[in-house]
Image (cartoon, each protein chain N blue to C red):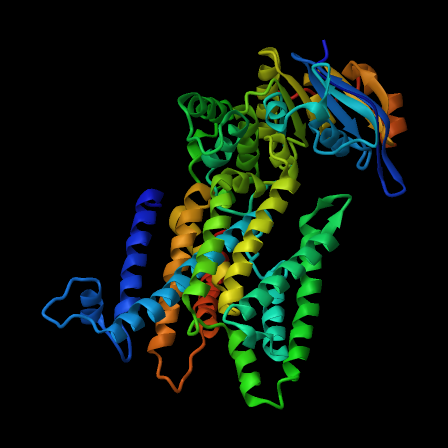
Length: 340
Length: 253
């Protein structure tokens, strides 16, 4: 039987704090826990932290932790919303082209040299790409002013394919330059090593803005998992609620992916994981998914940081390695008769 | 007395006129059967009466006021709906789905109040769903699923109830139990409109039958008159030769 959702949410919160502490205090080189405690004003038998150590802890690791935690939470909440709005447990933030648009915008910025303008040039370009492609998908899917699930899926597949091809085409322009080429590929595979406080504020701001709008709509999401006629008969304008919630989910995805590059699977897997823990009702599912997504992305990025430097493990690769086996587990469970 | 009335309803899908000037009315304390061939427009008519689809022509009024002018939640407190198919792909419990029936009564973010909980328990008890109410609906049989859907509609406490093929997938006993439950609801004052192919089972329990053909009302009135052999021959293209009317036998528990 399920534990009370409240307890699971509290347990996940504690787990996130633990993971965050590990993220700040464990490293291959540089300051460790002693220095962390010293920098926080709690020296335990050690010297006070040097300015260099403080810089590493609070201006390198802490913004990166923020990007990982709020980015993971954003993608998980976006996935949860998508799966309910599409009434489909294998929907994900990639479905309506948001992630593909972000990848295209980012790649284009790097190739054209716009990325060199400033730290947030690439995020900005990919945010624009994400919004443009998502908007196109919604326009193409619209029919008589209403948007159907099937229309969105088809438009999403079409635009994903098109934008994916354009991204690949743009990447070919970098073959002559090893530096540009590796930069684009690194960006497409996702990574947080360049996170600054500017990135952190963007991701945090996106999460606060959009998640705050999604949180009071938990029961709308429950109703959207029914067929539209039933949702309508219970007093919900389903097409309108779906459109609003999908835009909010795309906002979460765009602000995250624009700052992290492609992070596969997280938005698809975490809602399932959270549903196993607290059940499908969104009042408990949304906070559980947000916390689980944060824990998973912070943990995954910690794995990246601790990997040998010459291995250069990419974050998108780690999340894929987590995601694929989990879906095999779901498949095995499904074969024994459980619902997805 | 009429609570919900559609007059001259027209709906076109491309070139096809799905509804072509259909009239239908439903009042409290009556059980109306909406019959007709596949594609006659029964489901579309239900959707239009629910307000889920705007008709291209004609009007629907609820308590004398245009249905489109009703705020969604106020309308949901007046008309409840039982869909034909299982709905959610997620593992909600039956009780959680029935609780969604309280949505039109609840404030956003408010928890379930005592009168919500009481309505949910009454609804579950009415369809004998309490024994499986806490199991994930994805593990329920077709009949159990349908009873949860009916319980959700009852939990809205709406005086009007529209059902789309409520007895499909149900065995004879469960189908009959459902019909008798609807009959009890009608005696208690609700108005019930059923779109169904199950004429043999339902017609003896109905007050009126509306026979839809090619988007229009072919005949409406008392079951024995509407389902007379000549009408059945004309609409369904089959001969009915039961002695004493259309129905071969009446089922009892």
